[in-house]
Each structure stands twice: as C-alpha cells, then as structure tokens.
Image 1 (cartoon, rainbow, N blue to C red):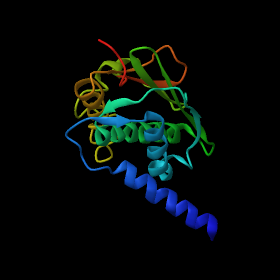
Image 2 (image 1 turned 180 degrees about the horizontal axis):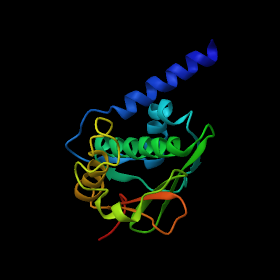
Image 3 (image 1 turned 180 degrees about the vertical axis):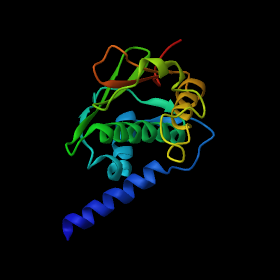
Length: 181
C-alpha cells in the first residue's frame, strides 16, 4: 500500500510539473527534470511496449523555454516512439533511449527507438502539418508539426532525424540559458 501511495504521489507531482500553466514568457527549465516528468506522465503509453533507457548528462545547463510547449513536444516524441516500437514488438519489448548532452551554445536531446524506422521516401514530409502514416482516424498529423514549431519557431533551435543512426533518432537542439550569440 505504501509503494502504491508513493507511486500515486509521484504521478501527482509529475502532472503538476507537466501541466504547468501556459506561460507567455520563457522560464528557466531543467531539461533532465522535464524529461523525467514527461516520462512519468506518459508511462502508460510506453511501459508495455518498451524498455526506457536514460542517458541524461547531469552537467546539462538550464534552458530558457516555454515549459508547456516543451513538455508537449517531449510527450509527442515519446508517445510516437512507443507507438513505433509497439508496431514491431511481436510480443517483445523494444527500446526507447533518451540522452541529453550540451556544447557551449546548445542543449541536445536525442530520443531513439527500436521501431521500424522512417522510410526515406517520406522523410522530407514528416514535419508537415496533417502528414501522417497512420490509418484514417488514428492520427491527426499534427504531432511532429507541433514539435517543429516549438523547437524551431518558439525556441530558436533545430529538430531533425539522425539518418545515420541505426535506430530512429529525433535530435532536438535548443540554445541554453548561458549561450552567447
């Protein structure tokens, strides 16, 4: 019972962090904490499909970010990864790996999955609004378009798929709070 109560308390804390009121101004965000919170909120989506591997760099600096859109972007990418892994699982768990790192200008987040990959012929369309590979009624085609808007337009960063990786790896780069122009 104590373990269950602690789990519920953890979920409530994560939901409070995740559902932070929509800010019109950027605030200081610890990206590793944002990832952990989003994982807690999305646990039901990935826990049966994938083993979660975290490689979070404890030295990653904070970023100035719109907390709500950033959390939504992380959620979109984690849920998409879980769905991709589930497509090819055949009763076995796949893997989702999330890693953070940084350089003098940017914080980098890499979200990889062991799903089927993205066909080369659609790679240039994946961030287009309304583009989806899902069946009619299953996907809106808005997830990756929202992620792109958040990272590129709202945060001055970049988002792309690392085609050199053996797994599907989405890479997000966001200027960190101490970066100089």
